[in-house]
Image (tube, rainbow, N blue to C red; front, side, top):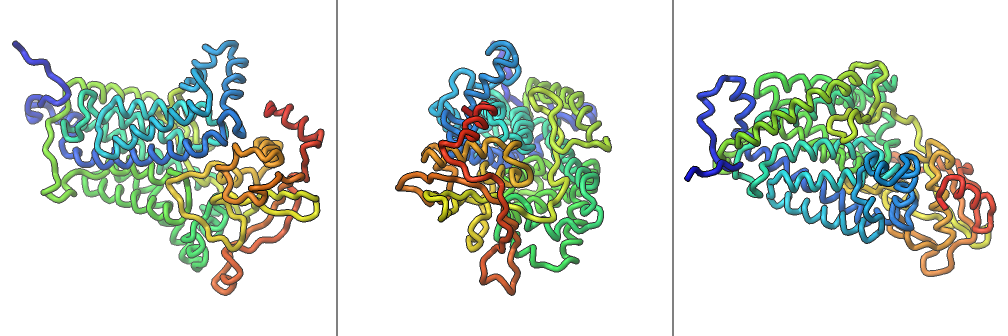
Length: 507
């Protein structure tokens, strides 16, 4: 009886095929590369779902700041029915938008991600992880509204393409080479998008001065940010030049020979490592390392660690080539965006976010303003709330938590650059603090009213924060001044509070 061919069977000798066929099919030099790439991606997924498991109910849960149940209801009204709403924003949470469902889905995602970290190499597992991330992205609203969420979707789908379907074993077969090139195309777009948006977005990137303020004004500085901020201007000028080389020149080396690709990969990975140390940019930099690993091949691995695996099945190669053709067509929009003088920093061009455009820090703030929430029981003595990673107490050391992501801390940075009318969730947060609602406790590092009656009044003030210097370090990590009103003192009996919440459908 003829034996069926599965994903693990070896195909005929590649040397019998034309050169282009060998180039597109032979991924035998990337078996270890794929394993490392997938395990890092599994780690990113795990931390992403862990942060959602811990913070999600407080942000988008039943009693969160922006409940996903209300968001889905609004989509259904706008689309005319729940089914049409599902087609517009597919998510598993249309079935059930409870906190239990949110925690159950993310816990399941954590288990799958852990399996990938331990070596599971299977397309169905990667598709399940992608579907969970897609479901969260469609209900996360402003707290999930950043480029790295789309980048995780695109990377996750590529991970599914690079894996076989009929096995979990990491070395059962080699990856299709075309899938490796898709990862290279992703890292090229990520780098070029970031580099071009800088040149087009802010004069300081062209003047080579952006890093003189960036370490101080980025969303959540780290202790290393403080150190880098103390360095002389010539160092920051050199840093911008390195940034421009890595983002604007190195991507073109991917078209060169193996040594050029390896050098480009080393530039990408090293650059991301510096960003990880000098800031808390969520899981973005860890995620960006994933496609950069496709620049390396197994010959860099010591001989005793190399693995010989059968070539991918004919079906796997065809799926990878077919997906490459889809990516080619879907890349027209992102390429046009990269070439446009009106380049969008982070944008999707298809409903599944399979091929998007990316960028970061198209503009750099010259100063840092921070919102500080304060509560009072008598209207005279005010005490401050603290968030886990956002600057508040000037003596508290900046955090270093990447790839973990404190979503409220991050959004507060944006809120300080706008008004509460544009960030209405902050008024909902004030209302919950006034009510002593424990649903938001996971978002706070310090509640001065914990264990007692909630405050009678809550307000938000805007302070100017500056990093201290070597000579003023004893004063703390920060200096702050100002203290202007961002949101006037509110109480539960304030009619304006009820009207605002109702107008923004937060009640």
